[in-house]
Image (cartoon, rainbow, N blue to C red; front, side):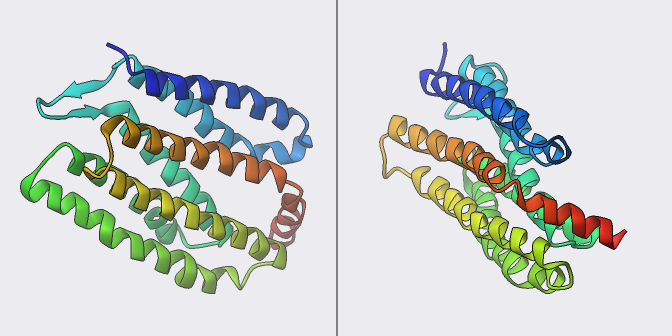
Length: 225
């Protein structure tokens, strides 16, 4: 049995990967390293959506299904995106680990809550609910104090990443609402997959479109060294 929604988005990710790869080839060589992580997320999504669409790695739990590759894909994607923003803020190693681990944990918690009930589902939901304001505090308060000590170019780039974080937060909120019984299942699944697509491809497109900012970033790194 296959999932046409996931397979359709797998094709969309594959096409987007080809477009982004062609775009990267037009980026100056010294700046391409900044594009590869986001391009990698889109390629990874193409692979995981294909596997999930073919029900590979999907565990039947009776009343629900647990998609292993979807959990892995989401955890890596959110960890990389939030971690990239934290790196721009020049945070400590401990803060970086928190920035990467928290959104990844929230993803696992939500996916676990979706296939369980009782206390486990409640714990998963609470992790997502309380993790949200913690992320806001980190990126809008704690990390801002750190990034102020860096170059202006780095600060400008961080602010752009921080603003895109609003989109990520909106994505998490949308996931929480559409997982309820307010929508027909197919519509809910399509909305989640669509926002997921915009998250990865849109973020990559934003970075590529603003890649010239990294000239200043490289200059600041050289100056710091």
